[in-house]
Length: 309
Image (cartoon, rainbow, N blue to C red; front, side):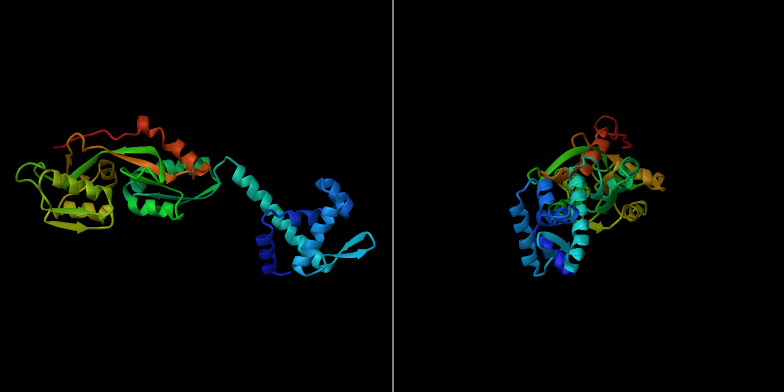
């Protein structure tokens, strides 16, 4: 019997009952004792064994009257049967086990991954060493699409996010601010609307918030420079190329933050929630454990406004 035969077996008997009956007949020395252990009538056990032989096209037993001896094909099948049954038992225990385990495919926005997640993920790894974390970054649209495609289990994204396909839980509150070169006059004032913005690609919630900020003031930037990382974005701001909008917390990771001016947004525009999302109805022990780990941020982890206007 080769591996293809095993795959055929698995496809035909997803409940593995035929393999379990076969194994019991071998282990208990015959149909009678196997039937007793399985709480089946002997004729049913005999029928299942013969059906298994017919499907495989080989004799699994050498029959001498009422006595059964394993044939070479039966001996080979027994090894595979034991392994498959053990794997099935392991899988059953795994899916019924409420403890986090296995691969956990997590997504996050770049700013969240850089600033908010190192501590919680380190704690998660300490508490749940049986979980293998895989982290992927992207904007909310990309991450939401990846969840619905089955490529990610959960992701940290900025609101708003559609309610219909996802379940969500509060994770972090951010204070979005506009950053400019040091000594830049207060933005938003007459004559102080920067003409160039620096942002990530379309789909980034911070870019959209900055574009909306311009629109509410009847303005539009003349030029948009797209970059792919916060260090590059902030480097351009320091050079006086333009302004950017980002969470204030990101500035703690930038060594030249003293060369920036930070401009607070007005009330109603100066708060942004990051939520943990997953496909509706697909919560797992891994997701639940992470949700519990970050849930304390609702009380203690909110970013406080510190205006430098």
